[in-house]
Image (tube, rainbow, N blue to C red; front, top):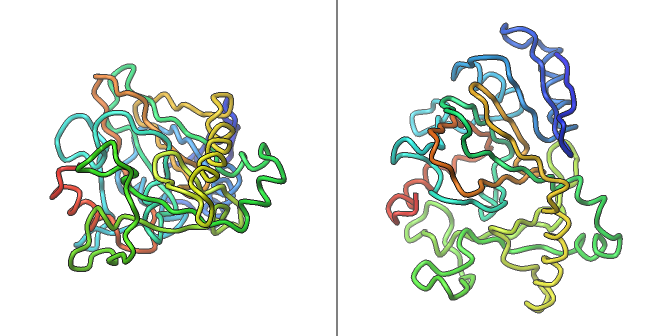
Length: 287
């Protein structure tokens, strides 16, 4: 197993060199590469579900479905059971609005026909080297509030307000109005790598600051974080597998093209949260 840097601001191409199950040394090499680069691209031909699960499980717990099997999801424009909303998706971490965001994501190009919609990535760890020390010092003792819906579903031009009392996920009465969580503005993943945990899609505000001050800081952060010079755009090819750290790398989808695209997804999570969100999302017609 070896890695070569991508022609990009971050990330690496991982060469498995064999289709045999990973031994102890390769599993450790996989983990070290993931920790170092945050995003890995694997292009080794067709990969079965079992192989994708095996590789991802090297990095942690693959979230199961309600039957206890690894939760297989699809991000696709081929059927209505896609697990992602339609249209453009701006930069985000999956489940930033949950108390326990998932730690890693893998997506495999199961159906790629031509010049399909790419996936864009931004590194929330490397951006720390581009921010001023004064700003970093300010962010280190701040927490941020994140909401799945920064604007009300019933009044799209009106900003959502965080409920004074949140109902815990999955409990009676829990729904989109309770999709809120607080996280440190700078946190560390399980490998000890620090990350700026702020994203344009879900971050509502920095807690303890006037809204105007918080908005100004976030605007400065996003200017550095989403500078096109530091964005990696992955042009999907058939059988690509992309694995990334959901705490140190954000992803986005530009305005979709019409070409057929199905990405097979499995992800890492220490808690079982996806079924709850999908159930409520489908009841509300959100996915």
